[in-house]
Image (tube, rainbow, N blue to C red):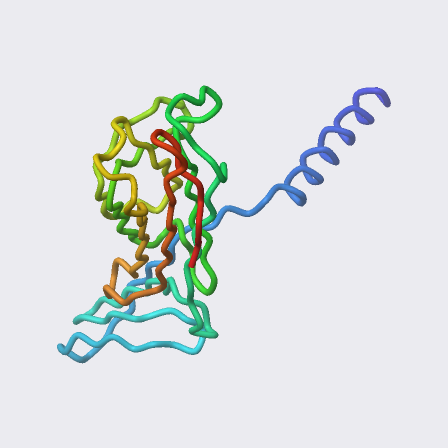
Length: 192
């Protein structure tokens, strides 16, 4: 009998410990709060949330912008030299880094003056061809080209512009400039 009680005690201790150390999941907060006003209002709160209230219902939506209100976007580009002949990468990897907002919740518009974008992400890691403009995509993209340009004098300009999808407010933008290296390769020249 004592073995059975010891085993039960160990199982209970394991469950309590697992419950105490498991990460808490975060879910959006939506509350129904009775109101007497028939006017819809949006009120910014001190904690960075907004409240949209209609008769008998208030919805609280977390803001993308942090409390300090200083936001920016910067792209990281790698490798520094790329040619479509390389087998190690499908293109130049472009990773958006945000300051002051959650980049995964932003709507990013990507543009390139030459070439096109590719996405290559989990879970299946299938290369998906995109166009020269991609709208609303906040993940990483690759830039590539197939044909060399008629005149490789003009640099390739890639822009990313992040907006708050709820308000349309500009959160940040970044520009990557690629210079041609010979006829069939580019190098990362500048990132702003």
